[in-house]
Length: 388
Image (cartoon, rainbow, N blue to C red; front, side):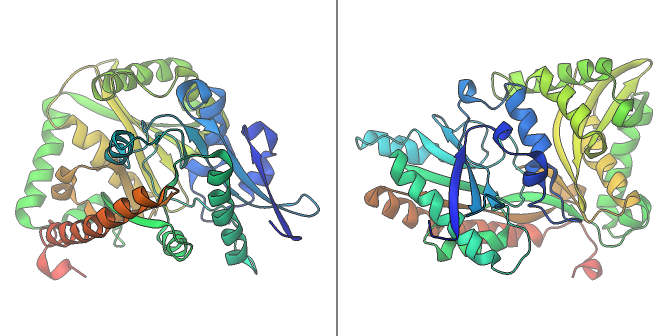
């Protein structure tokens, strides 16, 4: 790299100390998915390993004394599963033209469509220089490994802008997030909605709970026993088998996060009688509640909306969190107070013809994402006078 910096590639989080990795996120702005504990749990539990197509190639930026100055979580992949930013069309086109799209490099959190920092560099003088070193180091790693491409997905917008300056191709996509406009209670939030939407949410909550005879339990820390994890894993397996054919996460993963990051883990469980019938796992950031996996073994009307959306909103309000991110896609979230937001990814394509074709496609895709977000925003469920 230079006399000041060098990049070391590690295959496992075991090759760096947890304090060195976690020290790269500023205090008060912790994203739970790029913590050492979450990424190591994915690896140690055999959820994200070379056997499942996620071989660690994490970039570690160091000075000449071996001090860790930055990092970029990265994996060598032979498929495009578990990413939520879809490049299957690119892969198919390149393969038909005689190229080899796989393996590729993926800079992301496996199985986690949640935006957050990817260039893990703490606020400091020379931060941009360190990010440049990591961005260029990823390009050099592509060349050295002779892979088709590198993809940095669900990155922060400021990182995305910077990556564009380093000649990465820029991509946009859409999610739906709930934003806390200073609400004191859930009823306060409902008061900001149009009358029709407010009545619909009240009806859905009544149907989900009272009509179904269901109560809700919020569990954290040592409240989540292994028996509870067993039950939730059954929910997760049911959903995963229907959506992906095979669930991505192992049972051990859930035990590990329960042990390693108990205060960042929240289970919202639905109970009918003495039996848990559905649940959702959430992760708690310093300013955001991240909704992840949901599942059920009994199908009850409106229960998904209650467990995944309304309970998450209540938790965010009561704990002063700025927003709720409820996962990928889902325009049905709009009617429930979640508004469209743009997500960002950056892509380094080594083959010039493939790069040109993807670059042309992304011009049109970015324009369409912007147009769609604008249209949906005009149909947000809030009172007209409540819009900002």
